[in-house]
Length: 500
Ligand SMILES: Nc1ncnc2c1ncn2[C@@H]1O[C@H](COP(=O)(O)OP(=O)(O)OP(=O)(O)O)[C@@H](O)[C@H]1O
Ligand SMILES: [Mg+2]
Image (cartoon, rainbow, N blue to C red; front, side, top):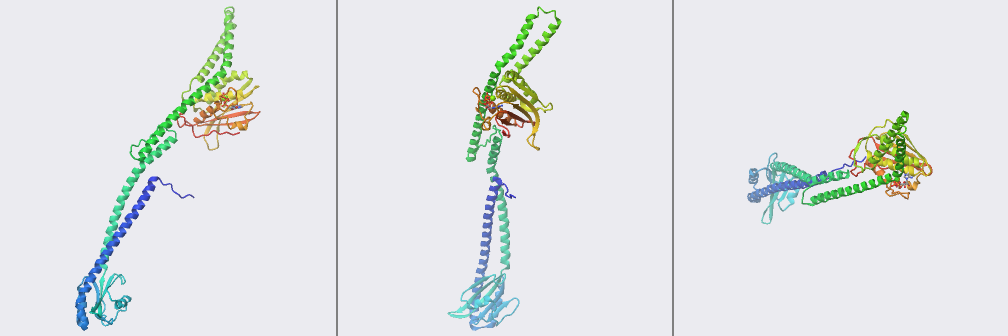
């Protein structure tokens, strides 16, 4: 299991600066406390040294004479010094000759503790802190000229000092915590201020990536972040400009593709229009002669109406196809769109001995599409199918509801199957490339534009083909409402799926 947590830049900066700050405040506090402690202990040692030196003055004579009474008095007098716990005066043999101690009388005994043994041997002042718990032990040899007479050993109670050190420590930790929390607050504010523009940039990058090219960061700052934001906005502006240009050239290509499809149709259509007109003309010529013939009149009226309606319908279909498409998404019935295009192409098909068969699912739900754009798709696909059959054949158009797999969304599928020459596997990889064509008169734009249109609708195209047998195109369009208005130049997430 991956336990790595994704931390935002803000949290990372905050944590690293915060930790560094904690280490700095912690170290400073520790050093302050330690130096305060040492200072207090040094002061205590100085006081002890002053005290022992004072005693030495009165001890020297008494020790020289070994005046035990006097020495005992001096030792007891040491009690007057602040915080004294014990006081010993010892002679040159290490015998205690004057003592003051709270608990026991040790007169004429010798020191049995390790420190005591060291003191007896030492020729200088010895200060010892903490060897015996909470006691500062100080000793000084007493000499007369070069003759060693003995020495003095005092013990000072450290508890008052330790209490003071505890108070200092407590205060220092309290102040340090307050400073740390205050600093942490500042770090938080500064980090937030520093990373906010970056967050804005991230949001902007995401919005642009999603296709919202109008989005701008708009950060007005004089530093590097400001320059970055400005560069970013300029980039978005240029991107929008390019997108617009691309869309315009796409539209030009689409218009050209429509016109070329129309060009292919005109010959057949002229024929389609002329035939009924000739019939109407003939009937009209005969009308004065056979005016009295009621059967003739009814027949003529029925035929003329039917043919004129048919021509009108055809011209309407053609006009709506020829009109430059303006993005206009609405709920449409796919059966109607496909049927309309098949109707326009029927003449062309008949001429090439191609039969168009329809098998539409009547319960197809309406879907959100740009009708004009989809007409162009089916025009291209059915024209391709007609052109793929040199000596006649059949085109089978069907519609149904489908889904990519059990859990995926539903799609409306239009299948266009022909019995034409088929496409070789090598060519199948390229048929959606712009300008790929195998035809003398072809521009190679039909499929690439169709593919683009379907993709913009959030749909996908699949193809199956066998050389000599025929080709089937499947156009799949999602049944949901499109998330974004179509025609903004960005395709939906679905990729064209080519299955051979
Ligand atoms: N139904 C089909 N049967 C066989 N080949 C096809 C079929 N549809 C497309 N193709 C092949 O794919 C190529 C590209 O098709 P596309 O519609 O993009 O361009 P075109 O038909 O050659 O030219 P245009 O459509 O611009 O007149 C065609 O030249 C043809 O070789
Ligand atoms: Mg084509």
